[in-house]
View 1 (cartoon, rainbow, N blue to C red):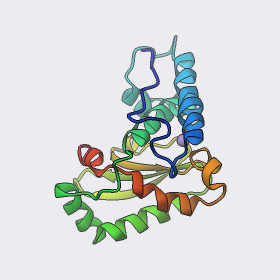
View 2 (view 1 turned 90 degrees about the horizontal axis):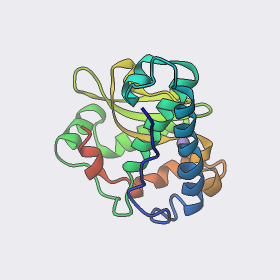
View 3 (view 1 turned 90 degrees about the vertical axis):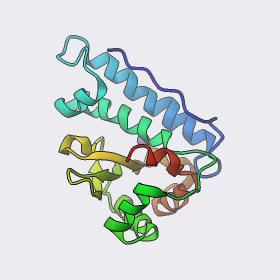
Length: 191
Ligand code: MN
């Protein structure tokens, strides 16, 4: 299967100033594209040549896993933002957040702490576990919680390439600002 870089669901300058056009030109246009290109170059002649992305993520390792997971992770990350974000979760997702974390505010601070304390490159994830409850998990590098039987609901990319052009070393400031562009209507559909 030949994978393609999905279109962004907004203009490259639509998330300014939280995520600048320049950051999207590199993060989406260069990094995300490179993972797609690398994956397409790696899978011909392997057992994953005709596999879908989720199957590759669950069954591969090494370079194929790293690039497949990064393709999936970035698509999932970029699609949860919107210039019309800055809303809050409602309905069943809000109920589950309140049940697992006590409140939306506690969830947000716990999630930012998970991102800030991820050493080096990685991802903070909100996931649904086998019991249907929400948890926050940290993954290094390309890690994706679906490899542990967890269902991804929401994520923050804490690789430096996600924020360095706009925030330099200030990862906590970047993560604190990201909430302003999260569209919870999109996240609710994943729950
Ligand atoms: Mn990234």
